Length: 252
Image (cartoon, rainbow, N blue to C red):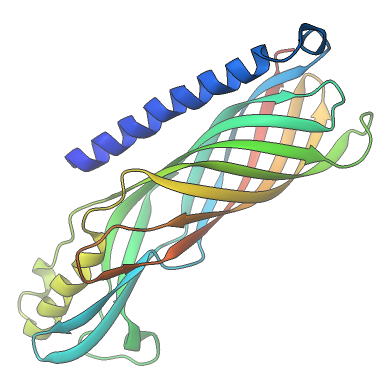
């Protein structure tokens, strides 16, 4: 793990603590008559998948015998898990949530642009191990009536994300000079990954209440600007989709 990634994870955790404190202070700042009402609280855990919808970024330039070349990198589908805490207003129609997520066994893949259309001697992908960690504060708005066992909700969120990549390895292409050169070029997109990046989330969920246990399915899209890479990398507004199932336990 690199120094930048360690700092990034520490940054996410420290800002996570700040968000948690802000969340608590926001609740405590409510009038006593409101706080005294029957707010609902529950913790939850979930698991599922992260699907990369849009590229992280692309690297453009000339290298070796190639006057103009372009490569793009993307996060490949991977397992993901998350956990968090949710507070539901007395009306039962609006909730506020703080949650963290991370990927498991994720990989990122870089490939020359033309290789998506044709094969060639420089069309091997450059694959690295990846990890995406995020922390989001969310607000949700339930549909249906308070007495319904299953209710849908739309939610929005703001948060922070960090990216980690293993060191790119071009040694397998040492006996193929052109591919080895192109590999070094593609590796630039993984340089200097953003340790902290702001992100926006929009999602939909269905929750079933089997008091005191809840079950849920969630789908959400997270948009994050990727500003990592070397000086030839052009960052892209990256999109990921999370699809998760989870279970919660009511604590009040």
